[in-house]
Length: 301
Image (cartoon, rainbow, N blue to C red; front, side, top):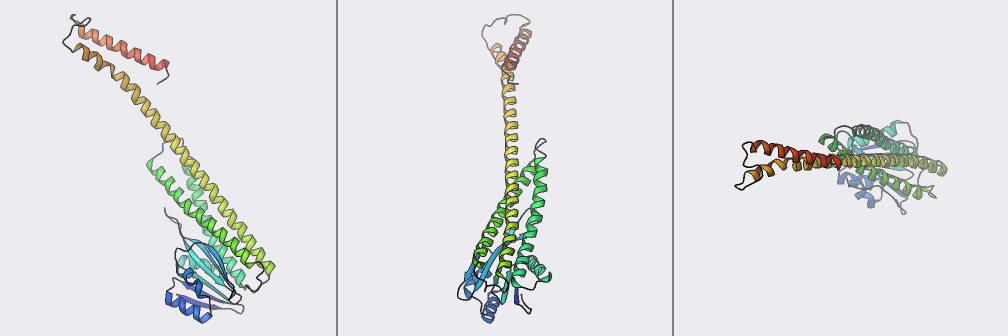
């Protein structure tokens, strides 16, 4: 789907779930650099900023959240291309296109304002996802003193996996914005607006993305520490269980040893007495109590 939005200052080409033939027509009609066509079509494109010296055309690829509900958190690229007369955005999903429309609905009058408003709208779901992850991590952290179930371990594993993708996406987005900042410096002809204003806008935007990256790093550390604590607790419980089983296996090994000796066809002390079976019970009890006392002294219980 391709929509053309014209305003007195610039033309916005809105592309959603594009086909190659549609993009080729747009590129030809508006004389856009063909070298960036693959950036527009690739659903796995990583964050980057680029510039074409021949056409004075700038490009920014940013990762936006594609699905932040349930257990899976994924990101998809949004392509933003611009010069001083044309803005083209390429999204691979309707949800991401709504973020670009939010920027347009805010009443922007310049390309730079549209781009930076869109980038702020793309960042907003990251903070929402961050709050959700923070609540889940806090809940998991609070159960360390209680029983740790398989469900808790699964939830922790999902959080850690999601954070890997989110931290990678925010770090890549930040690098792309910093590259864009370097591209825009000294190129006042790239956007039809004042250079100082653009530099201030992108500097403020970088601060927001840095804050998001830092918070994801903190949450990642919290989840890693919680996972480490879970592992220590489970290892300690396993050690206690093995110690318990070892102690009782030693104690319970005594009766079979004594009964085994007295069950053999050999002459043993007290074996000729009528009450020999009772003597074996007393002897077994003495050895058991001796073993228990020994383990108590050695603090094995």
